[in-house]
Length: 88
Image: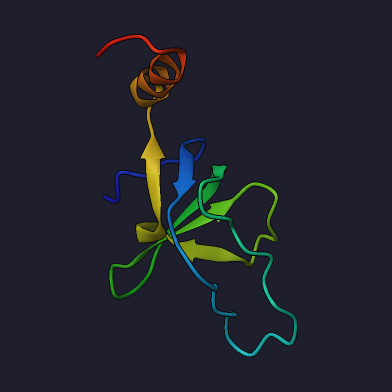
């Protein structure tokens, strides 16, 4: 089990360029570091690597899950409180 589910919020933490998949002639639209995405698909490769499909991307474009962190409701609340200056 990967811990990821459809509907989870994923924060992109990858820096740099994403690689194109297979022999596609056009570059992928890339997730941007610091941006949040909704998970539309969870795929576990034959080697156990977890990939995420993201809303707003082509269904054949999946991304390695280790390039994202899951955003939980508690993490969202803590981040908003820090922005508002609420002490921890």
